[in-house]
Image (cartoon, rainbow, N blue to C red; front, top):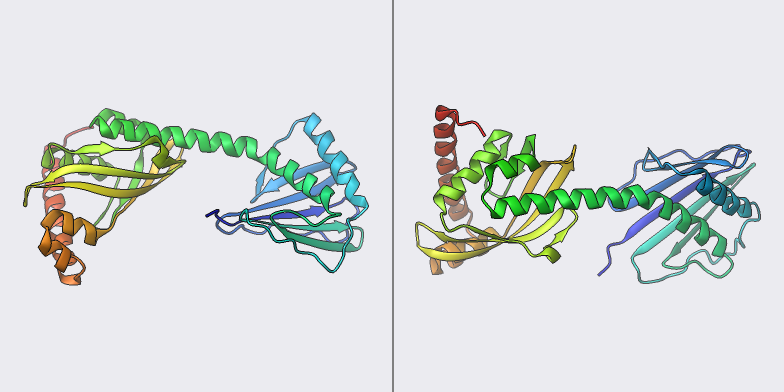
Length: 291
């Protein structure tokens, strides 16, 4: 099922007496603010960030926007429904007039020029947007490759010094995150990280950790989903999510399946893991092991 995305366009011509302001976009929103700063010269902002365009693109954009001087038919039917998960709204400010249009999927007949303008602006903004997404995905792929190799130096190339880590049991930051991986590699000597290429979607990753759980000697295929936030070409935040009840069943068998959903059982697991982690962190700190 497609994720609903809202595209909001606010277009103010040079002679507009009222110019819409740039509002903060919500999740999955892309808000574009187009202003004619001088005749046939336009600036574009997406979510408060300036979109850089070439002279040739500026000329093409001005040509398309000039056609909007002849506003599309503003009939009572202002909404066209579709199924591609996309809402588009356009507000035109020209002289003393402000007209709004909105459609779902594809615009109604007579609004084709609106679609041409919006699609062209999106294509201009997508060039750096796609490049940044590709860059972030390469960071994430590189990180998991090094994690699968148990390569400490490799992980350090991808983790930001101020990285924050979180999972359902504990939160860590900075050097503690590297020490956590060192602990797991020592505690789970057969730990294997499995990531399919199809499981990496920019900075969201589905992956598995395979290992033998020492207390019960049960072999586990642990399913996780991770969200990684990239800043300065390094991972600044790493959040792991997984089903703790399912993990309890895999780790403790029947007992875990029955009691794994109980708050008391989950609290005991958290306390045990936190105690083990704290002990390892204290030991690493005492040794002052550099990474």
